[in-house]
Amino acid sequence: MAVYILPDSGQSLIVTFDLVVSEGHESTSEVTEHPVERGSNIADHVRQNPQGLTLELYVTNTPIEDLGRGAISILQIDVPTYTPPLAPTPGALFSAAENGINQAIRGNPGPVKAQVLGFPSPFDRVKEVHDALLDLWKNGITSSVVTSVMTYDTMVLTRINMPRTEPGGATFNLDLKQIRTVTTASVAAPKPAEKRGAPSQSKGSQSTRPVGSQDAAKASSLATKALEALGQLLP
Image 1 (cartoon, helix red, strand yellow):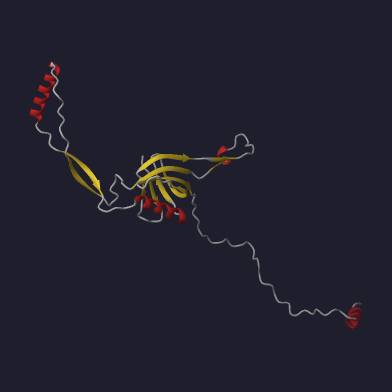
Image 2 (image 1 turned 180 degrees about the vertical axis):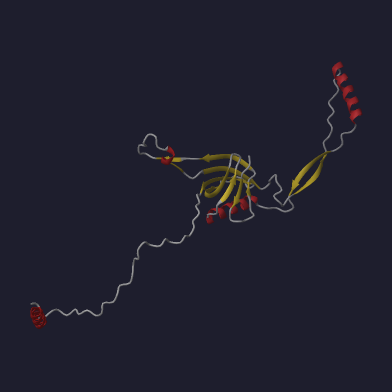
């Protein structure tokens, strides 16, 4: 199994691990507690929660991948030939003679060679991976996570636990949760059917002085004259 974390921030960094101890894939839903009418769409009453992922991983300072900093070389291994002691039995004598004939036919197998991955300078990969995970956690950077079961997108780190018992490597326990994203757009507001919020028209200055007895008498006199003039006009 292999796990890769690819940040969505445009960074070229891909966080890899040497060993995947376990994967925990969680998919849950919330169901309404109210009665649902028969014949209705049940899916309308079920809400899916964001997917969760739990990983237990291991990182070592002696990786088996070059990681862009190592080099592969050919190493010759001196393996001594083992010659078993000759037992004084007819079967052992026959086997020894057969082995001798086969070796004469095949010839010398030659030296044993192996490919070896070496690193020219020391490094602390455990610290590098831990720093990269902390950067994703502190800044809330979403990432795509590739696992042996499925690939997740827009995942954020919610927990990093790194128990370490020896300097050559460390275990990483990670919890990730998926973030749901939506797309928004700006549109023009519709025109109202009738004007609203129109400015009020000026009605001039309005007196706020209370009405006195002289003002009331003057108003009564004017009203009396108006009635008299109206009476003269009527037949």
